[in-house]
Image (cartoon, rainbow, N blue to C red; front, side, top):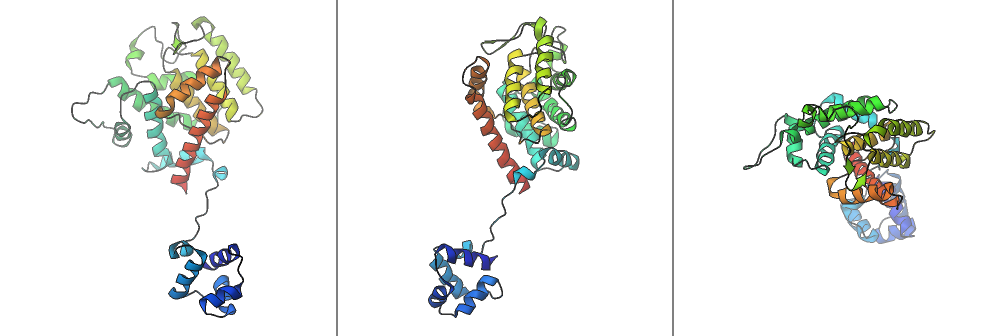
Length: 311
């Protein structure tokens, strides 16, 4: 309210009502009425007050926007509700586009963010000039939209091997990889793979290591963002699937944040160098802070998205 703003500015200036009244050439009782809201200053008085307080008239008149209390927002409930509404231009809509574009682009998908958005919004793809798009890039983008929808629906359920395998099946369904007998979409890898230059769990030990990882994680009494990051680093070290491990790992992060009412986050393609370095350091017994800081920075970015769409 204007009256409260006048009082606050006067007190910040360490001035009495009498002193302000003298400058405005009005009575102290008039200043008191300004501050209580029973009388509004005329334009001349507003100009003098703004000059006295060293702010613009607009700043003096503008109501302070109430800061959104993120801690009181259940992001999962918001995403579920907006998903059902099927409206554009909200948190769910932009989470789908930003998540699909960045997590796929990190893994080499060539679709642009505009093309990703076009697919989500219109179920068509936008081509410019002689641009050529891979069918797999398109399929994995569409599949990721389905994957996020499924993840939102089962976010509160405990993390299991079957759930993680279903995530992989949804992501890779219909792709060229799914047509390879040895690839085994929705099942653990059968051929040795690597995560960059990092050695991963041998195929014959994957099931044992995944079971051990999930037993540790599901035994925790309190899950914070640090436990979720720890799980992610261990999961990527196992690298249980032939391909798609990074995207599955990042969808698990998002799900577990939603389940535990922690602000979720999306690793952006522009930060992939820091993300990969963080994973490598974390997995090889080096500095854990690189990965943690990258994830916390991504969390800050998603928090800004929440503030923008829910303010």
